[in-house]
Length: 390
Image (tube, rainbow, N blue to C red):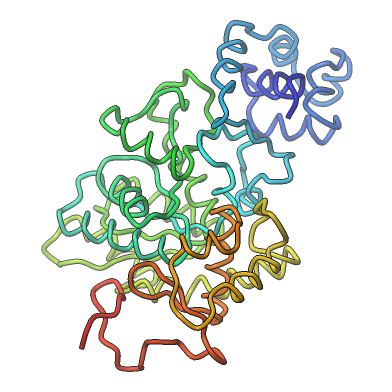
């Protein structure tokens, strides 16, 4: 995005009284953001804007624009618009997609198949352990872990993905020039280095209560499904689950003790049709068909991830690079020489298609004729589905 287009998008983003729906109407009337912000009053009126909205577009706050541009002047930061080819396809499909996304980190992770993990801010020790363990194992299977950077389950999910060497996406309810809660500053830096921080809010936007329900629709919208680990009956994470259902996403819930108030929200979700989850395979068996349908719909891949070659080419290269022994992701990355985000997405597609199997230690092995290598029908597993010695 060149400087003129960047400024035009920021003008649209910053204009008071001009929400996402109004901006999308403008983009149906004008070819791009530059044409919209440079249009005459008569043309803007014909496009459906009122007098105050037109004033806001034609007299933008230059001080705020300068601050936004200064924040974006960094190699790890990007403004991703609704019209960009690499805007996340899954998010584009929801009822009210954000027109703009501010990204700090690697925007390619937004194109990797994602699972959202959410839950209580006041989680129990067992809930935190479950969130971290599920996130780590799903990340080892090549899925990006998406959550909201909140205390409790969100933070545990992010940390689990990072500990496994995977990617994680934090969707924030503030501008990305600040971290909320403040105690997660170090975690936010780690996410930016190994995944992405994302927000529809411009730099400088504070942690307002009304921002977080809006943030939740992005968490669910980016994801194939939402896993609720622990939630009280009035938990905000149930909003994310409800939004996921409205968006046609899968909803998963981990059951807990009948004596644990933090399990009651999960139990309510299960009674209403959410899938009860005991292992990561319970999640994978549901999202596999979804991943295949999305790939068929797009013609090539689940998401348009920029790569050194096409997605099919990367998959073929991975299968050649594996040989007959289990190999680590680092080894595969060295052999295939593809971006990490594209590599993880391809590994996920291959595993869900039954062409490879995830092994202990984050390694992968090519399967012969679709058999699941290394796992017999009676192979014991731990609480999240990892094989354990007999």
